[in-house]
Amino acid sequence: MSNSKRIMKSALVAVALLGVSAAAAHADSFGAISLSPATGATGWSHDYSSRWEAEDVAQSHCYKNAGDCRVAIWFKNGCGAVARGPDGWGADWAAGSRQAQRAALAACSNHSYDCQVIRWQCSGGY
Image 1: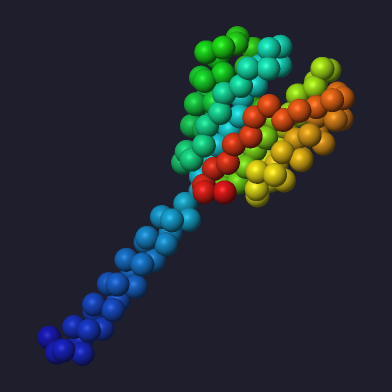
Image 2: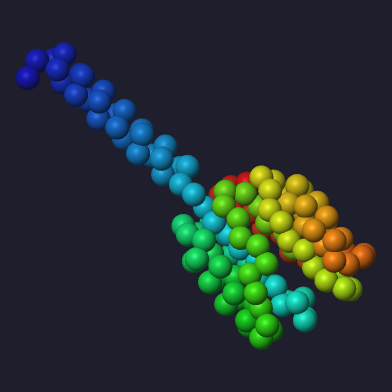
């Protein structure tokens, strides 16, 4: 094999490897927050490869402290938050933690007053 063909082959291999590592670095990352409406207990997860896995982990953590847990929010490559007030709760997601918390407070204020963020979590390095 000529020297130029070896160089070309090496360059193609390097480009292919860079493409694989770039794709792996940008793989989707899921998280979830589970909530007990009765007690306010929460469970959460982050950096899982599927929505279902993230929800299962959040639920199992919440069930350690309450029996009426439900997935309040799931998120992908971003952040989720849950806010709770005396008469209800709300949840939402966004690209960053502050935006997710503000959105959860807004969602909670549709059902209650004096809402407070009780849990936020980010996934995928956000």
